[in-house]
Length: 522
Image (cartoon, rainbow, N blue to C red; front, side, top):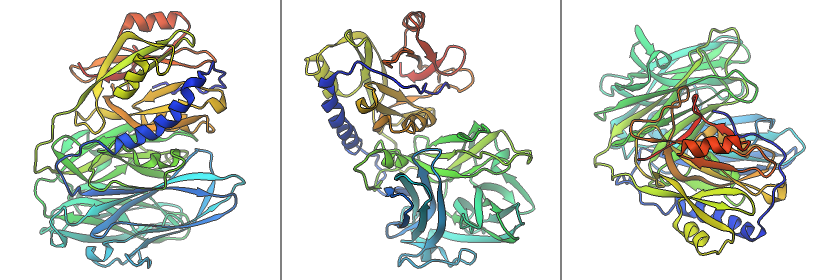
């Protein structure tokens, strides 16, 4: 999909709306936490995310701990800009008291409960930086207690300057692997792959060789560890369970070899299932890789850094709607024969209760003749304010489409639609919507010109990235950028309107030959 064109814009700013936008950012953020949740009261995965700020040439010493009864699965540091440089000086796996573990010889699963990660990060540059940190934690209680889970271990070697591949298989009494991790500390050795594996030690099937779609429960966990120095041990840990019904849902995306982009794979938890873990594989290896979670309450966990006043997010009883793995800068090591396909797996357990039906909302389009701008929204209060002239100059066009509401269920093509606002302080005054995590992230990375109003304002299906085809029954939505200094996008289901906007000088942005940006509900 064509990314949002980055330019230096000069806008005719509607000053009467600026205060509304500032308040709206808070309104949308609060709205995401007011949605009804699924019946699952103890989700398998709980997400803890923080917004951290590091001053110029300063050192940040930070601990993130899982709640009691939860064990740490993964930890990511998400930089606000792809060009940010820093130095990770320490990265420890810690127990509930904050004491580091020996990663090569972890005790049983119970010893990890309430544990987390300790990070020492040095800002090597002369400007302040915002970071988002995301930790995912597994609930032992949701799985039936400590007796339903065990930690399997296997060891190998990571050669000097090379990758060690280690498979840890589950014992017969705990046959399904739901998560796993390596012994790498991401300093001397880096984890460059962590994924389910099937079969046995004599005949293992790696995730990179599994096609997209549903498959059976993993029998173990595979890790890939890249060693920067001398040869060193590499240990794979598999978290194994005897909970019945475990299945795996496989998703993939192409790898782009670039300094500023590698891959971004989104794996949605299907309706009727609860996510218990996730992993990724590229067929070779990729780094750095960030782990992210899309939560039922409408939060994309790494969005914390884009809310200036945010400090800590805890998903609580809101289950994971999906997992994301993102690699930027170095996508794969050249010359290794790596697959152009980045693959991820969501390991899930059937839900005890049927999910509620999806919520459907109307997205209404407005037009401001003075600005020659279009604006869409699905929020009743915004629609009322625009209809009644609280924000003057706006009128309905009669156009619009239907989408899923925040926190809805739906099919596995759905994505959270972010909403970003071009800041008047940077010469902007326009909104941007996208269901592509790459577009959302890359637009916000544009030197502070854009602010995030919400990581999810509604949900929509995403078309096929090659053909632009929508899921059966959906209606294509086209996005046209006006290609002017007073930047604005129009979103329409009408091909005649799309063509008219292009004839006026706009650029159609989307997937496939017809440039389909989103897929609306019928």
